[in-house]
Image 1 (cartoon, rainbow, N blue to C red):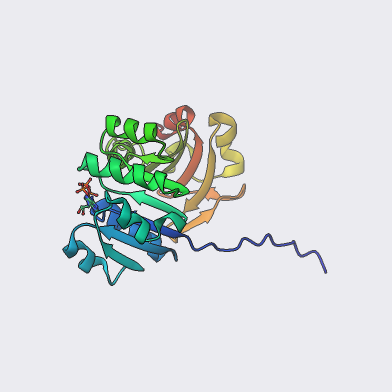
Image 2 (image 1 turned 90 degrees about the vertical axis):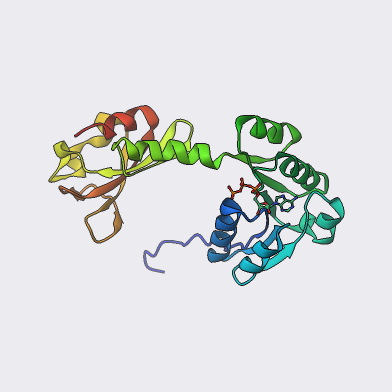
Length: 227
Ligand code: ATP
C-alpha cells in the first residue's frame, strides 16, 4: 500500500438543464453549460434564434413557454433544473417561472432585470433569482477604480480578488509577508507570468506578479488599497 493517500472519487454528473430565452444572457449560459459537458435544451419563441443556436446546443425548440402544454410536452418537469432567462418581457418571465414551479421542476433559476422583478420571482417561489447586470456592475466597479483586476463576491461578506502584489510585499516569501496575520486574508494563488499556481509558505511574491486572494470584504478591500 505504501503511503499513498486514499483518493476521494467524485463522479461527474452531467446535468440536464432547460434554458428558456436565448438572448445574450441565456445563450451565453447555455453555451457555457454545453462546453462544460452538460445537456442543454434551449427554448426560445424566436425561430431565427433557435436556428442560429441549433449547432451549438444539445437540443433546441421554438416554443412559447407561457403555454403550460408546451412545457409539459417538452418533458421539462423531468430535467434537473430550468433557467428562465427572459428579462425584458416581465409577464412572460413570471408566467414561465410559475408554470415551471407548478409542473414540479426541482430547481428553477430566473434572471431579474430589476429589484421589483426579482421580488416577484422570489415571492412565487423561484429557488434562485439572479441579477446579472447588478452583479456585473458591482464586480466591474472594483476594476474601474483600479483597486483590483477582478472582484467576485463569494458571499455578501466574503470576496475573492485578483490584484497585483502590493509594493510592501514584493520579494518576500508568504511565510515572511504575514499577510493573513496582518490583514486576515489569504493568498490562494500566484501568477509569475507562467500561469496561476497554488500559493505555499515558500512562494515568493515578486514585483508585477498577480495574486488571487480571498477573505472577508472589509479587510480585503483595505488590502487592495495598498500601493
Ligand atoms: P438579454 O439581455 O439576455 O439579451 P433580455 O433581458 O433583453 O435578454 P428578453 O429580450 O425579454 O430578455 O428575452 C430574451 C429571449 O427570450 C428573447 O430571445 C426572446 O425571444 C425570448 N422570449 C421572450 N418571451 C418568450 C416566451 N414567452 N417564450 C419563449 N421565449 C421567449
